[in-house]
Length: 205
Image 1 (tube, helix red, strand yellow):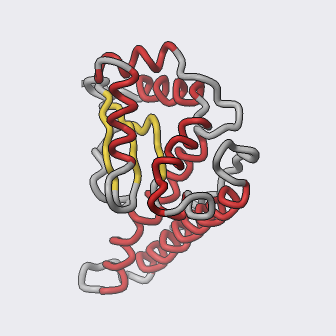
Image 2: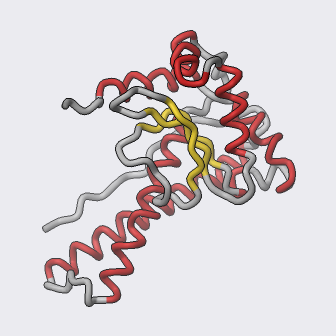
């Protein structure tokens, strides 16, 4: 059995408004670490299987199994986060506005709620998810990458609000300024792509 390896994705996101290139460079290195650790743990688990050591009574195996979700979740959420950032993101599309109006009443209601989630105390993620069954959109607070994630839901807008995402540019008490910068750099056409792919993967039943 051979564990499949992931490769770090490349993101051309220099020149963002309000988020320095230094922050982006540091943040991408952190993302690379999640990819590396995901591959490392996956390979270690595969080796344990080969050696017949994959058992709940093996503390090393149990710890790796528990930690894999954190590393994998960190890798994937960062790919969503970086994937929607661009220095020339433009303005929200009519398609996205229409989608959030169905669930929140208006774009302004959605943004107010999303920003409210992002400004909650603690570190984590603010994420707009889509339910693949009802197509309903909802904002969620995800603290650790593997906890609180609504199973099967599709991430549409992902904002990292761990302090490493903004500490080089803003003080901890200035998270609201970072959130403003995040919105100034959203590529709304990529958000539309996320909505489209979410609809395409809706379960049949």
